[in-house]
Amino acid sequence: MKVGLILIGDELLSGLRQDKHLPQVMSFLKARGLALAWVRIIGDDWDLLLQTLRETLQSDDIVFSFGGIGATPDDLTRQAAAAAAGVKLLRHPQAVALIEGRFGEEAYPNRIRMSELPDGASLIPNSINQIPGFKLQHHHFVPGFPNMAWPMVEWALDTYYAQYFDTTPPIEQRWTLHSVQESELIPMMEELLRTFPAVRISSLPSTVERRKIDFGIKGRAADIAPAAAWFAARMQADNIDYAPQT
Picture 1 (cartoon, one colour):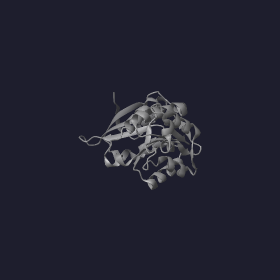
Picture 2 (cartoon, helix red, strand yellow):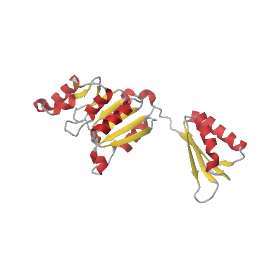
Picture 3 (cartoon, helix red, strand yellow):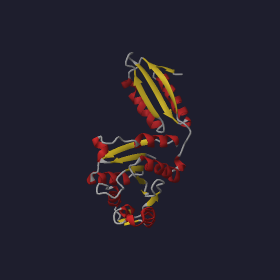
Picture 4 (tube, rainbow, N blue to C red):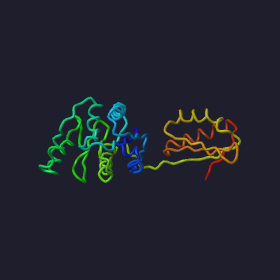
């Protein structure tokens, strides 16, 4: 399962605003034993937004999209999501009720546009001002305002994806390798990852001492143990000097 972010807004690309969502969502995911796989930052560009959502909706990735769900002309996300999914943009009855309840007669004629969502979308509650975000397939669309967006992201994670949570912290084992160049280890690293796809590796050559490498394997305990044993056996078979780090 991969998790991705789409951050939308010309102001992010111009530097007018600094993104705050990326580090916060990474923190939310880490607390649940998940990790971020990718992030895209795009402006208020219809063609690019449509292309992006068409690509991501075709995947099985869990996606959180920030910004562009308001009622002003530069808010294009609701319309692009519907077009990318090949569905109509319709007024969602529950969203209409929430917006009317929040604004009364002032919901018309403009604020009510925020109830126009892709057909088949479900609502993501907004505890700050009651104007909901929405879920379409595995995509979750929330406002760009952090105080609204972050509780909505946590709600979506806990409501729809708790079965994927793994709060057991990953572990890492590291070794110092001597008398070997990193390029010589590439076949071993490729085979290790093919054999144990659930782990990650890191290879850090020394910038001071030639032919010295800091090598690590990271993952869940159940995955690390066999991968580390395989690595040690390979080092011995290849006559490479290696020592565990403490």
